View 1 (cartoon, protein in one colour):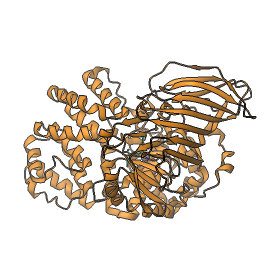
View 2 (cartoon, rainbow, N blue to C red):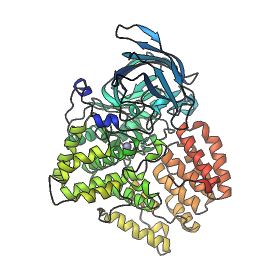
View 3 (tube, helix red, strand yellow):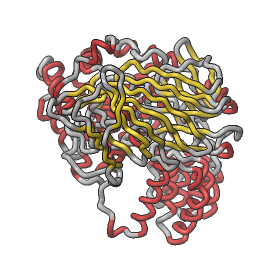
View 4 (cartoon, rainbow, N blue to C red):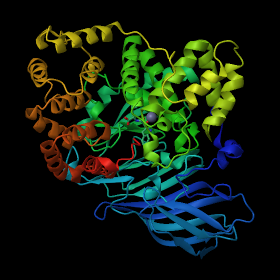
Length: 623
Ligand code: BES
Ligand code: ZN
């Protein structure tokens, strides 16, 4: 990758990207583009609000434009002023529309004289969808409160008034004040030696989309893991985190060996409290990560490979709309696999790939046809729901197919040239295809037909000749599972002592949907799955134990679901419980107690699932 200076890059806007209509934003980038944001904010823990000033630098595109339209959600706007070229300031009329679900409130600012910048004084709401505020009691060390953001997909607008579309990129700076003893981290270069003096400054010199704006503040300690990497975590979590993530520098170097320089300077990791609603988030310079990957044996660190890979696929070359999200997640999952293979070997990489393939094969047929496409037709869904196994696992399967057809050497060179060509820009699927055709498909004729490419991108299902890697160890587990279920192999003879995390996941994933209770009890007696410290194994185990009718597993399942707010690990427990009336009542009781500790997104997901389970006839069928 060529890390061109951003000043030059600012001028290189691809016209088509600016024009890609984004149904999840009110912004009108063909009229005016926010090219830079200056934030001056205070982290107010007692009030659970950020408040301060956002100054947006404007690049007016349309001489006839009279308004700047921004995305906001749940913001209290105190004032809006224009700043002219001489630095003079005057108030601007504006209208804040009432909130539309998932879109927020359109903010239309009257600016017919095209000011150089607008200055917005505002405060966030304690219920902002993109922030979680934790009391000291909800943290690991219980001493100080904690705040973190999760902006992707469309939640940046709940803490910064902005053009909240991935097609629009801007540089930003922030001055953040917080109580002394609190460390503030953001998605920009962070200084690991910064004193705890209550005042932090950040400068993101690369143009980034709004969903990559991030902030965290709390009792954060820092430990270096390499020349350009450190982990940030609560003091009692720090040593475990540094141990788990000790290979970070090797991962960066491996990715650089494949696709060229890492362009962002430092690459730090921030381990959040267990209520973080995702596994990881590729915030530039500072990946946010769930503590559920700290299992002691590095078996789940491909999460770091994944978030690091986004430094190329996603943060350099960005999906222009949420419908194109497979360009971020599919390409990244492919690159993740390459990093994992280089560092941990083929067996590990293949097992992770196969877990994803088998899961995708199971779910894809249950999705509406349009949702089976990598690039779906326009559809009315919440941006967060554009995300599915299809984007990740069909997307990466398509990339592996290209790799196999064209060979590693030529495909690697192609992918590096793709990152170079589109670096620092936001592109649609169609722009990606327009580059793919001459630079890979037509350049090496006879390897793959164009209609085969289109079948991957625009077709439903999975092409019949999609390559599936071999795993003798998984094959052996399939055989053992079969014998165990048939009753010809006792649970304690499964010989699972040497199974790694992925092998346990695979064994559990392919148990029947409602296994026999006695089988599950025997499995637990032999292998002590109830109470496992590994939440990937726990989620799968509790799911099956509940489905089998094993009420003895409920309290441990409830403890798991209460402690962990990561949606992917918690929702399946609730989903398994709501299938019976007694289980549903139990799920509601667990949720009532756990809710205070959950992130707004986790709450919304569970409540949505409960509502659907109560009135199945009203489900739309859209995942
Ligand atoms: N960017 C995603 C998380 C995301 C996507 C949040 C869309 C909101 C909307 C991140 O890179 C990701 O994919 N995380 C995974 C990690 C896993 C695939 C290793 C997760 O959170 O589970
Ligand atoms: Zn991702």
